[in-house]
Image (cartoon, rainbow, N blue to C red; front, side, top):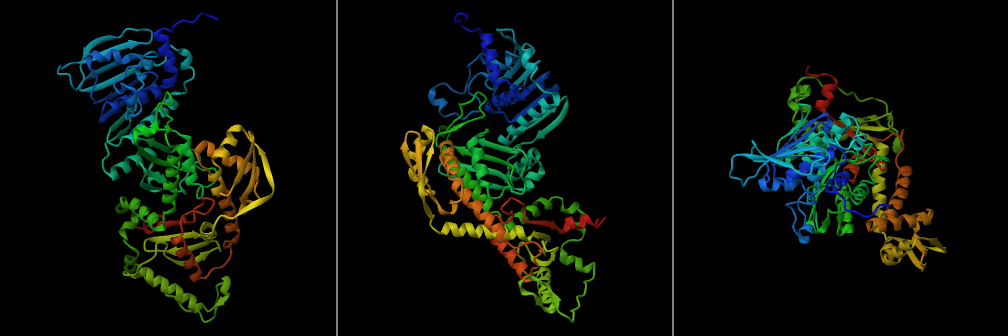
Length: 607
């Protein structure tokens, strides 16, 4: 073992680079954060060979003074904090003062800057290579702002270079970083080039429509078409942004952007709260998509817990978790067919004039172009099935005609899901509203309606608890036993009565009666784990909802059951009044809509 000695500055910088500079995308992230902190309103990013040959970031920020250029390349030099009080109220993206020093130690770096306060005409350029400790300073031509150029990344650390992927993969990571930054600052213009080819050119977005357009450019138009906008406030908290409808889910968690005071993070507390909000409506194994912004006091969040600042620590994590869950859970529950159809109309409005169906106008205008079909009343009764058995065919036709008259009357108010016209294969309900055709999966829709009614009935009754005939003893860790003892009243509120009998042992005395067939020991362990991790648990509610979901599935109307027109219309009205009616208990869609323009496209009308 060698004697203890002080590391050289160059070696210390290269070790720090291992934490900050993982790949070219890490360099782009650090440089963009510096530019945004400098007040830039325009950012130009130029990449060559996936970032291995060249990384250049140019901004129009406040710039760096000549005297500070060389100092900026030293470790732990920053203009963003000066005292411990500043560290506890960080509002900037960067503050550690390690980025430029770490980058310069593993690349050939040059930086040109002109300060806004500098009256001289010329800017100043500083250059440094990984093996050098002294930077050279020279005059240069540059507008107000800063340009940082990084060439030959990892040229002096070939071991690090071996771990990099292909050019396409590395640029894909850079592209993702630029997208994240573009979503964090709508007021900034972003331009990205790769090998002299323009990839993105995002103009500043000020209005809500412009912001939504940028989100659509970054996340894809399908996300905007299948998302809702939320803007909710709580005690010292504000949550706003876009969350996808449950029917628009992903196989991977790759379309999830969450920002805390403008800083993108990946936090397990946030992920858990969002998934909990989607628990009742998301298909198994699928992931929601969202672009969300959480705003709170800088002193209420600690961003100095990870070198890359991807993780944060909330002062009151339980408050944040409960606010995120309750806000999103409520927003998803309040999505009605009316809102979904309105969003669909808004998405179609922009291109409506260019579609073939636009030449024909509304359904009422079609009457001038085609003759109505005459309906003759049959003289013999027709079988319509369902609980009513045989009914006179004339009455059924009268119901059809009455609904059709309402649909075609200009002054009639037609419900969002319209009126039923027919039943297809004993599975789907075909309905028509003012704007097009709606198909409903009658079993999935009835299952959601029944499930929501069962949940409401359970909420209206007091939680019934059942004492165990023989109390269950469970061996746990000391930490879990401490949690059970300190959270005894909170656990009792969700129906579990626990008692600590030893340092590493607890006894379960009562559980919710509806869960008497569940694996009690596993359930208690899961609840304690959640309380330790997130400050609360929804395991009891989740198990109860799972049982109610199964009961609702078995008690819902089955396929091949013939429904009458009034029964189908009653189901449609119940769907319009039920929360989360757009999805069944398993996350499948319960209805789909085809506008008249979309139907016209299918048949090439107007072409």
